[in-house]
Image 1: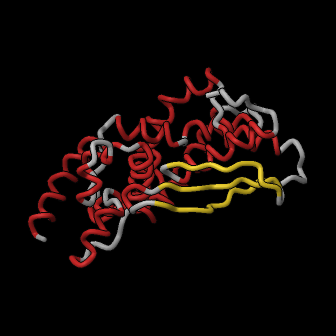
Image 2 (image 1 turned 135 degrees about the horizontal axis):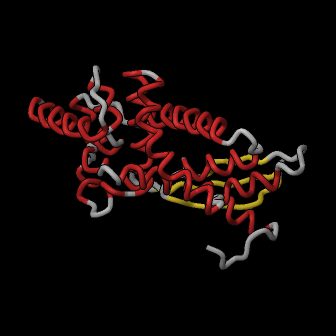
Length: 244
């Protein structure tokens, strides 16, 4: 137990230097770096808190920071542009890219099965979730301004390319189309979870009112929702089946 704790503190100190933020409460950082597979294998030793709750909070903090930036950076832009741009900046691919830029996965704690996998430590969904959990840890430890200081360089560095490319993911595209008819309601429903904790596969369905439009599976909830939205776009004739 003591040996693990010392290794955690050393790794955390190195990571804090890289991200430019020193935690007052390092336990918040430990939680942000703890994958659920580690808790599952070490529950009897008292490790019971993974980064899943932190991920939830970090997602909201990230959304607020990004929305605030776009709102003030583009004062003439309509809601559709702001929504599409935000979606591209906080999507799984973007967050995974941010994480890999400072090798966040190398500082995380995994169960033996996950850490022995050649891709486990750098799985896109895993490091994207960890990035959100890290945002939450900084927010809880230092407040919104410290979280903003950490997040903004990543967002602003990607912003220009996103705007130029007009990037729009499947979910945002489907939402934009549905919003053209105000009385229509689009909802996503989690219908399945398969596989061990370190290698989950999620299944989602997307409905227009009560009508099933599409189904999708993925290694993360975001990926599954995107797959369902893609199938829905094909169904309504807004996307070719062989489109990327």
